[in-house]
Amino acid sequence: MPRTILFIFGTRPEAIKLCPLILRLQQAPERFRVRVCVTAQHRDMLDQVLAAFAIRPDYDLDAMQPGQTLYQSTSRILGALEPVFKDAQPEVAIVQGDTTTTLCGALAAFYAGVPVAHVEAGLRTGDLRQPFPEEMNRVLAARLTALHFAATERAADNLAMEGSTSNVWVTGNTGIDAVLYVRDRLERGEMVAPAAPYLDAGKRMILVTAHRRESFGEGFERICRALAAIANRDDVQLVYPVHPNPRVQEPVDRYLRGHRNITLLEPLDYVRFVDLMRRAYLILTDSGGIQEEGPSLGKPILVLREKTERPEAVEAGTVRLVGTDVGRIAAETSALLDRPEAYARMARIHNPYGDGHACERIDAALREFLRL
Ligand code: UD1
Ligand code: UDP
Image 1 (tube, rainbow, N blue to C red):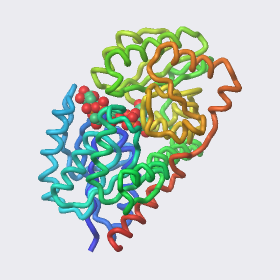
Image 2 (tube, helix red, strand yellow; image 1 turned 90 degrees about the vertical axis):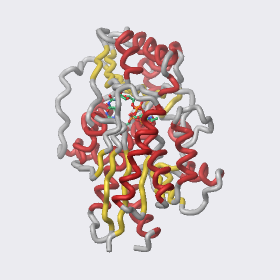
Image 3 (cartoon, rainbow, N blue to C red; image 1 turned 135 degrees about the horizontal axis):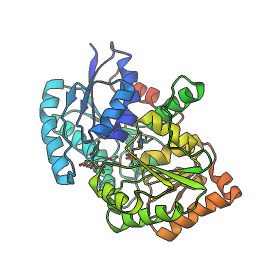
């Protein structure tokens, strides 16, 4: 009898990092009965990923509301998961990362007496308020988890320091499986990203994303002012797919819309975004996933945050933390634009977060746990 595995996810990054694992487990229907529950904590950004991987959820909780607060999304998602567990009767529930959906999925599984498998376990900044609320979500998820899939040895060490030493597997990050899959197919011409007519071939392209809650307000305004200052150079073009959160849209509109060297876009589907990362000269971001993908693509990343839970590439010198100070962001960006030797040191392909085979290792670990 196949064993029922329930995937629970809700945001874009969780979807990008779990869809390759869903596709893999679905290939063995004699072993696994795969059930997919999306909370739809995100709506359009989630649906973009589901379409790219051709995954049709069995349960869609349709939880997103415009401008939702943490209280609202947490209570809606947790409440809506109770009937899903009753109906699916899973033997293992799989969650990923550090979002509200991750925490609610793990807690709901605990209430149902179902072992939780946590993909991307053990990331820590050591500061419960940065990133907020993700660091707390990770710590709480680890307490609720039975199977920890850590991307790196460092992440496994973090879990060990908190007392989680059994059922920890170092697997690599499934996000690297996803990005290398798309990159290889783009390079071989087996996938084609739609044209990007807004790109100016005569300028170096700087790709930008930003959405962290702890920066909202003054920190985010400083990021916008730094971007405007960088874009005053006529040898660069900033391309910025803007997160739909109203707390992001408002300052971006106020500071950046209409600037001649800034192209503001809607969130891009994953293939388009990987294609843009390949074409970028450098990337400015506060994203977690992009900090992992950049090194695998050989793109320097300047991280618009004070702390990171992904220190491996910082230590290797291909990712640098620049915070939210206007002068520092502008100066570090200028250094990479004007000093070829500084650029060359950071533009190095390496894979500290995975080798593209994380899903295989997680599949093997699940079989070991379920004695399959
Ligand atoms: C969430 C995660 C964060 C992750 C990010 C990825 C939490 C607490 N935060 O933050 O860890 O890095 O997703 O992007 O779980 N919205 C839309 N359409 C969408 C998605 C969002 O309009 O497809 C807007 C809505 O107004 C929504 C708001 O963005 O209310 C915020 O979404 P939410 O999921 O609460 O937080 P994120 O900032 O996206
Ligand atoms: N991404 C995407 N389209 C975009 C911006 C980002 O597909 O317009 C991808 C990116 O390649 C990475 C993931 O979304 O895999 C990161 O998501 P996000 O930054 O929203 O969340 P985080 O990783 O910070 O939790």
